[in-house]
Amino acid sequence: MKLASFILTLVLIWVFTIPIFGQSFAQVTWNTFEEENGLFSVQVPSNWNVSEISGAEALAPIDYIFHYNDKGNSFAWIELMISEPFYTNSSAVLDSFMSQYQQYDDFVLLEPITCDKYTLNDEPACSFLSSQHLEGELRRNVLDIVSISPNGTQTYVVFVASNNIYEPFLPVAEYVVDSISINSTMARLLLENISLENIQTEIPDVLTNVGNQSQTFSSAFDTFVNADPQGYGVYDQRNSSTFSPGEDIILYIEPVGFEYGTTGEGSDSIRLTFLQILSFLIQKEMS
Image 1: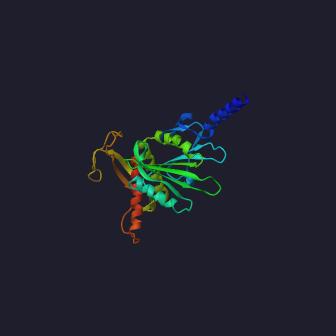
Image 2: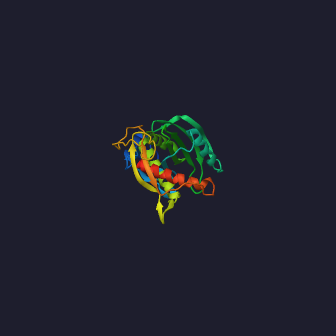
Image 3: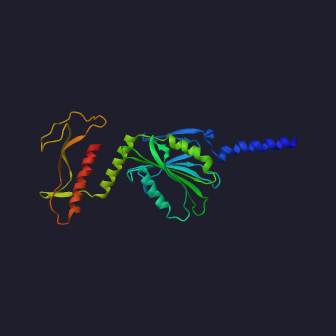
């Protein structure tokens, strides 16, 4: 009787220990996380935290991390990064990542680059698996997955877990990755806005002298038009600011506060004015 009771106790301990240290897909309670602006949605285990990474710590313009509540010295997280493409294809992106990893003595390639195992947001993705060991922590397994959408948006997901829990957590991570649904149009617009903000931060206002006053580059008049303007004041004004998907957005703008000509300082000084104009045009187009 005592032996049977002892065996039963062992069974109960085993059953209730698995959900804590070895999360299989069936043992996870799932929550749907939706980015507040509708940028993306994803299924995340209920005992994982979600946070946005911003500022100097962000590795991409759009950077979110889904972090497992650690038990002891074990750890696991998934990071979702959306950016402009680094290269023309996903395999080339991963080649560059691997080159960076290989600079460290603790790098071990576990699975080479393959492009037939995963998808991201219904797009074909490439991946590779490596092992790394940082001082003061357990050796970690790192799964890198990258896809590039036809509209020119790069999605990069990395799953990192201490190697003692990587295998039982892998089905959970793969489900999270498979559940990622990105609003590609919104992602593209957001990235363009971020690029515009970077241009405006890097380029100072262009001031020119008009009479005895300095004038900032701006628009004296602008409007949407139906076709390319044929000259100053020669345009076919559009009566609506609503456009169909894929339809060209054409603006007629009468800018003021700029000048052109030879500066004597080479092409870079001319390019500054062109970038300022380009920044303004993009801003008008996005407003």
